[in-house]
Length: 509
Image 1: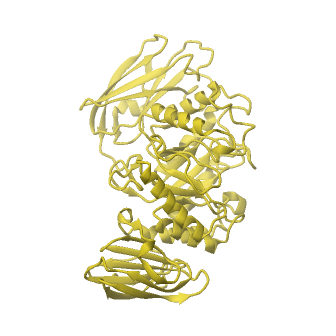
Image 2: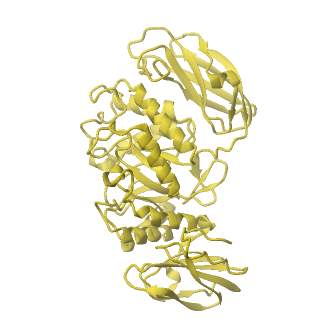
Image 3: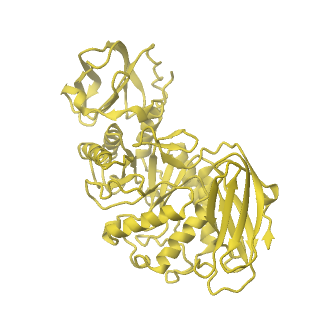
Protein backbone atom coordinates (compact mmCIF):
# COMPACT_ATOMS: atom_id res chain seq x y z
CA UNK A 1 0.00 0.00 0.00
CA UNK A 2 1.37 3.41 -0.98
CA UNK A 3 0.85 6.25 1.48
CA UNK A 4 1.39 9.60 -0.23
CA UNK A 5 3.62 12.07 1.55
CA UNK A 6 3.07 15.82 1.16
CA UNK A 7 5.97 16.01 -1.27
CA UNK A 8 4.74 12.97 -3.18
CA UNK A 9 1.28 14.49 -3.57
CA UNK A 10 2.85 17.39 -5.43
CA UNK A 11 4.79 14.93 -7.63
CA UNK A 12 7.38 17.64 -8.24
CA UNK A 13 10.87 18.22 -6.91
CA UNK A 14 13.84 20.45 -7.66
CA UNK A 15 17.00 19.25 -9.37
CA UNK A 16 19.39 17.57 -6.86
CA UNK A 17 16.81 17.85 -4.09
CA UNK A 18 15.56 14.96 -1.98
CA UNK A 19 12.36 13.31 -3.21
CA UNK A 20 10.67 11.00 -0.71
CA UNK A 21 8.10 8.25 -1.14
CA UNK A 22 6.45 6.83 1.98
CA UNK A 23 5.01 3.32 1.87
CA UNK A 24 3.47 1.09 4.52
CA UNK A 25 3.95 -2.62 5.04
CA UNK A 26 2.06 -4.14 7.96
CA UNK A 27 3.71 -7.57 7.84
CA UNK A 28 5.58 -8.84 10.85
CA UNK A 29 9.32 -9.23 10.26
CA UNK A 30 11.98 -10.48 12.66
CA UNK A 31 13.94 -7.24 12.14
CA UNK A 32 12.53 -4.56 9.88
CA UNK A 33 15.90 -2.78 9.72
CA UNK A 34 17.65 -5.85 8.33
CA UNK A 35 17.91 -5.83 4.54
CA UNK A 36 18.51 -9.59 4.60
CA UNK A 37 15.04 -10.05 6.10
CA UNK A 38 13.25 -7.77 3.65
CA UNK A 39 14.43 -5.15 1.16
CA UNK A 40 12.45 -2.34 -0.45
CA UNK A 41 13.93 -1.29 -3.79
CA UNK A 42 13.02 1.67 -5.99
CA UNK A 43 13.85 2.16 -9.66
CA UNK A 44 13.69 5.65 -11.20
CA UNK A 45 13.89 6.25 -14.96
CA UNK A 46 14.36 9.64 -16.61
CA UNK A 47 12.89 10.76 -19.92
CA UNK A 48 16.31 10.14 -21.50
CA UNK A 49 16.39 6.55 -20.27
CA UNK A 50 18.77 7.05 -17.33
CA UNK A 51 18.00 4.46 -14.62
CA UNK A 52 18.80 4.95 -10.93
CA UNK A 53 18.23 2.09 -8.49
CA UNK A 54 17.87 2.99 -4.80
CA UNK A 55 17.34 1.03 -1.60
CA UNK A 56 14.52 1.98 0.75
CA UNK A 57 14.74 1.83 4.55
CA UNK A 58 12.54 1.18 7.57
CA UNK A 59 11.44 4.31 9.47
CA UNK A 60 9.21 3.14 12.33
CA UNK A 61 6.16 5.39 12.57
CA UNK A 62 7.71 7.85 10.08
CA UNK A 63 8.10 10.58 12.70
CA UNK A 64 10.99 9.35 14.86
CA UNK A 65 9.15 6.58 16.72
CA UNK A 66 10.80 3.16 16.79
CA UNK A 67 7.72 1.09 15.95
CA UNK A 68 5.33 1.27 13.04
CA UNK A 69 4.78 0.12 9.48
CA UNK A 70 6.50 2.94 7.58
CA UNK A 71 9.26 2.47 5.00
CA UNK A 72 10.69 5.26 2.86
CA UNK A 73 12.43 5.58 -0.48
CA UNK A 74 14.57 8.64 -1.13
CA UNK A 75 15.76 9.78 -4.52
CA UNK A 76 17.93 12.67 -5.72
CA UNK A 77 17.19 13.45 -9.40
CA UNK A 78 20.06 14.69 -11.57
CA UNK A 79 18.08 15.51 -14.72
CA UNK A 80 15.25 17.95 -15.35
CA UNK A 81 12.03 16.55 -16.78
CA UNK A 82 9.67 13.67 -16.08
CA UNK A 83 10.85 10.60 -14.22
CA UNK A 84 8.86 7.41 -13.74
CA UNK A 85 9.44 5.03 -10.88
CA UNK A 86 8.44 1.67 -9.49
CA UNK A 87 9.16 -0.04 -6.20
CA UNK A 88 9.24 -3.70 -5.22
CA UNK A 89 9.67 -5.83 -2.09
CA UNK A 90 12.09 -8.73 -1.91
CA UNK A 91 9.47 -11.02 -0.30
CA UNK A 92 6.87 -10.47 -3.00
CA UNK A 93 4.73 -7.94 -1.14
CA UNK A 94 2.90 -5.90 -3.82
CA UNK A 95 4.80 -2.81 -4.94
CA UNK A 96 3.72 0.28 -6.84
CA UNK A 97 4.69 2.93 -9.37
CA UNK A 98 4.30 6.57 -10.23
CA UNK A 99 5.95 9.59 -11.80
CA UNK A 100 7.43 12.92 -10.82
CA UNK A 101 8.44 16.15 -12.49
CA UNK A 102 11.89 17.58 -11.83
CA UNK A 103 12.32 21.33 -12.19
CA UNK A 104 15.41 23.52 -12.00
CA UNK A 105 16.54 24.57 -8.54
CA UNK A 106 19.21 26.57 -6.75
CA UNK A 107 20.76 23.32 -5.45
CA UNK A 108 24.31 22.98 -6.81
CA UNK A 109 24.32 19.21 -6.55
CA UNK A 110 26.76 16.82 -4.88
CA UNK A 111 30.52 17.29 -4.96
CA UNK A 112 32.50 15.62 -7.74
CA UNK A 113 36.11 15.66 -8.85
CA UNK A 114 36.74 18.43 -11.36
CA UNK A 115 37.39 16.50 -14.61
CA UNK A 116 39.56 19.34 -15.95
CA UNK A 117 41.53 19.80 -12.70
CA UNK A 118 41.40 16.51 -10.79
CA UNK A 119 43.15 17.83 -7.68
CA UNK A 120 40.07 20.00 -7.12
CA UNK A 121 36.31 19.62 -6.66
CA UNK A 122 33.18 20.97 -8.27
CA UNK A 123 29.50 20.67 -7.60
CA UNK A 124 27.45 18.70 -10.09
CA UNK A 125 26.36 22.00 -11.66
CA UNK A 126 30.01 22.80 -12.48
CA UNK A 127 30.64 25.39 -9.74
CA UNK A 128 34.01 25.01 -8.03
CA UNK A 129 34.18 24.17 -4.33
CA UNK A 130 37.04 25.37 -2.12
CA UNK A 131 37.18 23.02 0.87
CA UNK A 132 37.30 25.15 4.04
CA UNK A 133 36.50 22.70 6.81
CA UNK A 134 36.17 22.21 10.52
CA UNK A 135 35.91 19.22 12.87
CA UNK A 136 33.41 18.19 15.54
CA UNK A 137 33.99 14.85 17.25
CA UNK A 138 31.10 15.35 19.70
CA UNK A 139 28.59 17.22 17.58
CA UNK A 140 25.84 14.66 18.25
CA UNK A 141 26.44 14.02 21.92
CA UNK A 142 23.17 13.84 23.83
CA UNK A 143 24.07 16.74 26.14
CA UNK A 144 23.75 19.18 23.22
CA UNK A 145 20.40 20.37 21.89
CA UNK A 146 19.48 20.96 18.28
CA UNK A 147 19.52 24.66 19.03
CA UNK A 148 23.12 24.29 20.19
CA UNK A 149 23.96 22.58 16.91
CA UNK A 150 22.15 25.14 14.79
CA UNK A 151 23.91 27.95 16.65
CA UNK A 152 27.26 26.29 15.91
CA UNK A 153 26.38 25.88 12.23
CA UNK A 154 25.36 29.54 12.00
CA UNK A 155 28.68 30.57 13.52
CA UNK A 156 30.66 28.33 11.17
CA UNK A 157 28.73 29.61 8.17
CA UNK A 158 29.46 33.20 9.18
CA UNK A 159 33.17 32.31 9.10
CA UNK A 160 32.80 30.83 5.60
CA UNK A 161 33.35 27.26 6.83
CA UNK A 162 31.64 25.19 4.16
CA UNK A 163 31.98 21.64 5.45
CA UNK A 164 31.87 19.97 8.84
CA UNK A 165 33.27 16.60 9.84
CA UNK A 166 30.95 14.89 12.34
CA UNK A 167 31.51 11.43 13.80
CA UNK A 168 28.65 8.96 13.98
CA UNK A 169 30.45 6.67 16.44
CA UNK A 170 32.61 8.17 19.19
CA UNK A 171 33.52 7.17 22.72
CA UNK A 172 36.40 9.56 23.34
CA UNK A 173 35.20 12.20 25.77
CA UNK A 174 31.58 11.86 24.66
CA UNK A 175 29.16 9.15 23.62
CA UNK A 176 27.91 9.27 20.04
CA UNK A 177 26.37 6.30 18.24
CA UNK A 178 23.41 5.74 15.89
CA UNK A 179 21.95 2.69 17.66
CA UNK A 180 19.29 2.64 20.42
CA UNK A 181 21.87 1.40 22.95
CA UNK A 182 25.61 0.75 23.01
CA UNK A 183 25.08 -2.99 22.62
CA UNK A 184 22.25 -3.19 20.08
CA UNK A 185 23.83 -2.86 16.64
CA UNK A 186 21.02 -4.53 14.67
CA UNK A 187 18.57 -1.63 15.02
CA UNK A 188 18.88 2.15 14.68
CA UNK A 189 17.62 4.97 16.86
CA UNK A 190 15.04 6.67 14.66
CA UNK A 191 14.94 9.74 16.90
CA UNK A 192 18.70 10.14 16.30
CA UNK A 193 18.12 9.71 12.57
CA UNK A 194 15.69 12.62 12.68
CA UNK A 195 18.30 14.68 14.52
CA UNK A 196 20.90 13.94 11.83
CA UNK A 197 18.45 14.81 9.06
CA UNK A 198 17.54 18.15 10.60
CA UNK A 199 21.24 19.06 10.91
CA UNK A 200 22.00 18.03 7.33
CA UNK A 201 19.06 20.03 6.01
CA UNK A 202 20.03 23.05 8.11
CA UNK A 203 23.54 22.88 6.70
CA UNK A 204 22.26 22.39 3.17
CA UNK A 205 20.25 25.61 3.41
CA UNK A 206 23.55 27.38 4.21
CA UNK A 207 25.53 25.80 1.40
CA UNK A 208 27.53 23.55 3.75
CA UNK A 209 28.70 19.99 3.23
CA UNK A 210 28.05 17.37 5.91
CA UNK A 211 31.17 15.15 5.97
CA UNK A 212 29.91 11.85 7.43
CA UNK A 213 32.63 9.83 9.23
CA UNK A 214 31.44 6.32 10.10
CA UNK A 215 33.99 5.51 12.84
CA UNK A 216 36.28 7.14 15.38
CA UNK A 217 39.68 5.82 16.37
CA UNK A 218 39.12 5.69 20.13
CA UNK A 219 35.76 3.92 20.06
CA UNK A 220 36.57 0.23 19.76
CA UNK A 221 34.11 -0.46 22.59
CA UNK A 222 31.33 0.69 20.25
CA UNK A 223 32.51 -0.37 16.80
CA UNK A 224 31.10 -3.59 15.30
CA UNK A 225 33.58 -6.27 14.30
CA UNK A 226 35.28 -5.69 10.96
CA UNK A 227 33.22 -6.98 8.02
CA UNK A 228 30.56 -8.34 10.39
CA UNK A 229 26.88 -8.44 9.51
CA UNK A 230 26.31 -5.60 11.99
CA UNK A 231 28.91 -3.44 10.26
CA UNK A 232 27.43 -4.15 6.84
CA UNK A 233 23.96 -3.31 8.13
CA UNK A 234 25.28 -0.03 9.58
CA UNK A 235 26.87 1.10 6.34
CA UNK A 236 23.96 -0.02 4.21
CA UNK A 237 21.26 1.61 6.32
CA UNK A 238 23.07 4.94 6.57
CA UNK A 239 23.66 5.06 2.81
CA UNK A 240 20.05 4.09 2.04
CA UNK A 241 18.74 6.78 4.35
CA UNK A 242 21.10 9.68 3.67
CA UNK A 243 22.59 9.34 0.19
CA UNK A 244 19.75 11.32 -1.40
CA UNK A 245 21.03 14.48 0.30
CA UNK A 246 23.22 16.42 -2.12
CA UNK A 247 25.43 17.89 0.64
CA UNK A 248 26.88 14.58 1.86
CA UNK A 249 30.42 13.24 1.62
CA UNK A 250 31.61 9.99 3.24
CA UNK A 251 34.68 9.02 5.22
CA UNK A 252 35.15 5.40 6.28
CA UNK A 253 37.01 5.95 9.52
CA UNK A 254 39.14 8.27 11.62
CA UNK A 255 42.70 6.92 11.96
CA UNK A 256 41.53 3.63 10.48
CA UNK A 257 44.92 1.91 10.78
CA UNK A 258 44.63 1.80 14.56
CA UNK A 259 41.78 -0.75 14.34
CA UNK A 260 41.20 -1.72 10.68
CA UNK A 261 43.42 -3.11 7.92
CA UNK A 262 44.27 -1.75 4.48
CA UNK A 263 42.27 -4.58 2.94
CA UNK A 264 39.24 -3.54 5.02
CA UNK A 265 39.50 -0.05 3.54
CA UNK A 266 39.70 -1.45 0.02
CA UNK A 267 36.65 -3.69 0.42
CA UNK A 268 34.55 -1.17 2.37
CA UNK A 269 35.32 1.60 -0.12
CA UNK A 270 34.10 -0.62 -2.95
CA UNK A 271 31.01 -1.49 -0.90
CA UNK A 272 30.11 2.15 -0.24
CA UNK A 273 30.50 3.05 -3.90
CA UNK A 274 28.32 0.11 -4.94
CA UNK A 275 25.60 1.03 -2.44
CA UNK A 276 25.58 4.78 -3.10
CA UNK A 277 23.68 5.49 -6.35
CA UNK A 278 24.98 9.07 -6.47
CA UNK A 279 28.73 8.45 -6.16
CA UNK A 280 29.29 10.93 -3.31
CA UNK A 281 32.94 11.65 -2.61
CA UNK A 282 34.55 9.07 -0.32
CA UNK A 283 37.78 9.02 1.66
CA UNK A 284 39.46 7.41 4.67
CA UNK A 285 41.56 9.09 7.35
CA UNK A 286 44.89 7.52 8.26
CA UNK A 287 47.09 8.00 11.32
CA UNK A 288 49.93 10.45 11.55
CA UNK A 289 52.24 9.93 8.58
CA UNK A 290 53.48 11.71 5.49
CA UNK A 291 52.42 9.36 2.70
CA UNK A 292 49.00 8.39 1.36
CA UNK A 293 48.42 4.65 1.63
CA UNK A 294 46.00 4.10 -1.28
CA UNK A 295 47.31 5.79 -4.45
CA UNK A 296 45.35 4.71 -7.50
CA UNK A 297 42.41 3.26 -5.54
CA UNK A 298 39.39 3.75 -7.84
CA UNK A 299 36.90 4.24 -5.00
CA UNK A 300 38.68 6.75 -2.74
CA UNK A 301 38.22 10.29 -4.01
CA UNK A 302 40.57 12.41 -1.91
CA UNK A 303 43.62 12.00 0.27
CA UNK A 304 43.00 12.50 4.00
CA UNK A 305 46.26 13.05 5.88
CA UNK A 306 46.98 13.67 9.54
CA UNK A 307 50.04 15.58 10.78
CA UNK A 308 49.56 16.69 14.36
CA UNK A 309 51.01 19.13 15.17
CA UNK A 310 52.61 20.36 11.96
CA UNK A 311 54.07 23.68 10.85
CA UNK A 312 54.24 25.22 7.39
CA UNK A 313 57.60 23.67 6.53
CA UNK A 314 56.13 20.20 7.12
CA UNK A 315 52.74 20.42 5.45
CA UNK A 316 53.75 22.17 2.21
CA UNK A 317 56.19 19.52 0.95
CA UNK A 318 53.91 16.70 2.10
CA UNK A 319 50.91 18.07 0.21
CA UNK A 320 53.04 18.43 -2.93
CA UNK A 321 54.54 14.96 -2.55
CA UNK A 322 51.10 13.36 -2.22
CA UNK A 323 49.72 15.30 -5.18
CA UNK A 324 52.61 13.90 -7.19
CA UNK A 325 51.99 10.42 -5.75
CA UNK A 326 48.36 10.39 -6.87
CA UNK A 327 49.38 11.73 -10.29
CA UNK A 328 51.95 8.98 -10.78
CA UNK A 329 49.37 6.37 -9.73
CA UNK A 330 47.22 7.37 -12.70
CA UNK A 331 44.42 8.81 -10.55
CA UNK A 332 44.85 12.42 -9.52
CA UNK A 333 42.67 13.37 -6.56
CA UNK A 334 42.52 16.28 -4.09
CA UNK A 335 44.90 16.19 -1.13
CA UNK A 336 43.72 17.32 2.30
CA UNK A 337 45.27 17.62 5.72
CA UNK A 338 42.39 16.91 8.06
CA UNK A 339 44.12 17.10 11.41
CA UNK A 340 47.19 19.28 11.86
CA UNK A 341 45.93 21.78 14.41
CA UNK A 342 43.54 21.67 17.38
CA UNK A 343 43.05 25.05 18.98
CA UNK A 344 43.35 24.78 22.71
CA UNK A 345 45.38 21.58 22.54
CA UNK A 346 47.92 21.45 19.68
CA UNK A 347 49.63 24.34 17.98
CA UNK A 348 49.68 28.11 18.10
CA UNK A 349 47.05 29.96 16.07
CA UNK A 350 49.79 31.85 14.21
CA UNK A 351 51.32 28.54 13.17
CA UNK A 352 47.86 27.48 12.03
CA UNK A 353 47.65 30.53 9.78
CA UNK A 354 51.04 29.80 8.24
CA UNK A 355 50.15 26.13 7.80
CA UNK A 356 46.89 26.69 5.93
CA UNK A 357 48.58 29.07 3.49
CA UNK A 358 51.41 26.57 3.01
CA UNK A 359 48.87 23.81 2.36
CA UNK A 360 46.95 25.86 -0.20
CA UNK A 361 50.13 27.00 -1.95
CA UNK A 362 50.96 23.30 -2.23
CA UNK A 363 47.70 22.73 -4.06
CA UNK A 364 45.88 21.13 -1.13
CA UNK A 365 43.01 21.76 1.25
CA UNK A 366 42.62 21.67 5.02
CA UNK A 367 40.22 20.92 7.81
CA UNK A 368 40.98 22.53 11.16
CA UNK A 369 39.83 21.47 14.60
CA UNK A 370 38.58 23.93 17.17
CA UNK A 371 37.51 21.58 19.98
CA UNK A 372 34.11 23.17 19.49
CA UNK A 373 32.21 23.55 22.75
CA UNK A 374 35.27 22.39 24.67
CA UNK A 375 36.75 25.87 24.35
CA UNK A 376 33.65 28.07 24.21
CA UNK A 377 29.87 28.28 23.78
CA UNK A 378 30.32 27.58 20.96
CA UNK A 379 33.67 28.57 19.46
CA UNK A 380 33.99 31.87 21.33
CA UNK A 381 37.75 31.37 21.69
CA UNK A 382 38.34 29.87 18.24
CA UNK A 383 40.58 32.58 16.80
CA UNK A 384 41.74 30.45 13.90
CA UNK A 385 38.43 30.98 12.07
CA UNK A 386 39.39 34.60 11.46
CA UNK A 387 42.46 33.51 9.52
CA UNK A 388 40.82 30.73 7.53
CA UNK A 389 38.04 33.13 6.51
CA UNK A 390 40.59 35.60 5.13
CA UNK A 391 42.27 32.83 3.15
CA UNK A 392 38.96 31.49 1.80
CA UNK A 393 37.65 34.88 0.73
CA UNK A 394 40.89 35.75 -1.05
CA UNK A 395 41.39 32.43 -2.83
CA UNK A 396 37.82 32.22 -4.09
CA UNK A 397 38.27 35.51 -5.97
CA UNK A 398 40.84 33.69 -8.15
CA UNK A 399 40.74 30.74 -10.56
CA UNK A 400 42.64 28.80 -7.89
CA UNK A 401 41.96 25.47 -9.60
CA UNK A 402 44.23 26.56 -12.47
CA UNK A 403 47.22 27.11 -10.15
CA UNK A 404 49.94 24.56 -9.44
CA UNK A 405 52.61 24.40 -6.71
CA UNK A 406 55.64 26.20 -8.16
CA UNK A 407 58.29 26.56 -5.45
CA UNK A 408 60.94 26.17 -8.17
CA UNK A 409 60.13 29.73 -9.31
CA UNK A 410 61.96 31.10 -6.28
CA UNK A 411 65.45 32.24 -7.29
CA UNK A 412 66.63 33.50 -3.90
CA UNK A 413 65.58 35.23 -0.71
CA UNK A 414 63.14 34.58 2.10
CA UNK A 415 61.17 31.40 2.71
CA UNK A 416 58.33 31.32 0.19
CA UNK A 417 55.67 28.83 -0.89
CA UNK A 418 54.59 29.51 -4.45
CA UNK A 419 51.55 28.62 -6.53
CA UNK A 420 51.21 29.80 -10.10
CA UNK A 421 49.73 29.58 -13.54
CA UNK A 422 52.74 30.63 -15.59
CA UNK A 423 52.13 33.86 -17.45
CA UNK A 424 48.87 34.62 -15.65
CA UNK A 425 48.76 34.28 -11.85
CA UNK A 426 51.52 34.03 -9.25
CA UNK A 427 51.05 33.66 -5.49
CA UNK A 428 53.97 33.57 -3.05
CA UNK A 429 53.33 33.10 0.66
CA UNK A 430 56.17 34.44 2.83
CA UNK A 431 55.64 33.18 6.41
CA UNK A 432 58.19 35.64 7.81
CA UNK A 433 57.99 38.43 5.23
CA UNK A 434 61.30 39.58 3.77
CA UNK A 435 62.50 39.82 0.17
CA UNK A 436 62.10 37.13 -2.45
CA UNK A 437 63.30 36.97 -6.05
CA UNK A 438 61.06 35.11 -8.49
CA UNK A 439 61.69 33.81 -11.98
CA UNK A 440 59.22 35.56 -14.28
CA UNK A 441 61.01 34.70 -17.51
CA UNK A 442 57.96 32.73 -18.62
CA UNK A 443 55.72 35.77 -18.24
CA UNK A 444 55.41 38.48 -20.86
CA UNK A 445 53.86 41.91 -20.44
CA UNK A 446 52.92 43.96 -17.41
CA UNK A 447 51.67 42.48 -14.17
CA UNK A 448 49.78 43.99 -11.25
CA UNK A 449 51.34 43.41 -7.85
CA UNK A 450 49.70 43.53 -4.43
CA UNK A 451 50.42 42.26 -0.91
CA UNK A 452 47.69 40.60 1.18
CA UNK A 453 48.12 40.73 4.94
CA UNK A 454 46.91 37.25 6.08
CA UNK A 455 46.53 38.54 9.65
CA UNK A 456 44.04 41.30 8.80
CA UNK A 457 42.82 40.70 5.26
CA UNK A 458 43.93 44.14 4.09
CA UNK A 459 45.74 44.64 0.78
CA UNK A 460 48.60 47.07 0.23
CA UNK A 461 51.63 47.84 -1.96
CA UNK A 462 49.72 48.16 -5.23
CA UNK A 463 52.20 48.46 -8.11
CA UNK A 464 53.14 46.90 -11.43
CA UNK A 465 56.08 44.87 -12.72
CA UNK A 466 57.25 43.68 -16.14
CA UNK A 467 57.71 40.00 -16.83
CA UNK A 468 60.53 38.45 -18.81
CA UNK A 469 63.20 38.02 -16.11
CA UNK A 470 63.99 37.62 -12.44
CA UNK A 471 62.16 40.13 -10.26
CA UNK A 472 62.57 40.92 -6.56
CA UNK A 473 59.72 41.75 -4.17
CA UNK A 474 59.95 42.99 -0.59
CA UNK A 475 57.09 42.44 1.85
CA UNK A 476 55.75 45.47 3.73
CA UNK A 477 57.23 44.06 6.99
CA UNK A 478 59.34 41.18 8.23
CA UNK A 479 59.79 39.07 11.33
CA UNK A 480 58.88 35.67 12.74
CA UNK A 481 55.38 34.85 11.42
CA UNK A 482 54.93 38.40 10.18
CA UNK A 483 53.54 36.78 7.08
CA UNK A 484 52.48 38.21 3.72
CA UNK A 485 51.01 36.88 0.51
CA UNK A 486 52.42 38.29 -2.72
CA UNK A 487 49.89 38.31 -5.57
CA UNK A 488 51.05 38.96 -9.14
CA UNK A 489 48.38 39.03 -11.84
CA UNK A 490 48.61 39.77 -15.54
CA UNK A 491 46.80 42.57 -17.38
CA UNK A 492 44.43 45.38 -16.54
CA UNK A 493 44.59 48.10 -13.94
CA UNK A 494 45.54 47.22 -10.35
CA UNK A 495 42.55 46.24 -8.19
CA UNK A 496 41.29 48.76 -5.66
CA UNK A 497 42.72 48.68 -2.18
CA UNK A 498 40.46 47.42 0.62
CA UNK A 499 39.94 50.14 3.21
CA UNK A 500 42.12 49.26 6.21
CA UNK A 501 39.16 49.92 8.54
CA UNK A 502 37.31 46.89 7.15
CA UNK A 503 39.79 44.02 7.05
CA UNK A 504 37.34 41.33 6.03
CA UNK A 505 39.61 39.54 3.61
CA UNK A 506 37.39 40.51 0.70
CA UNK A 507 38.84 42.44 -2.20
CA UNK A 508 37.04 44.82 -4.50
CA UNK A 509 37.72 44.71 -8.22
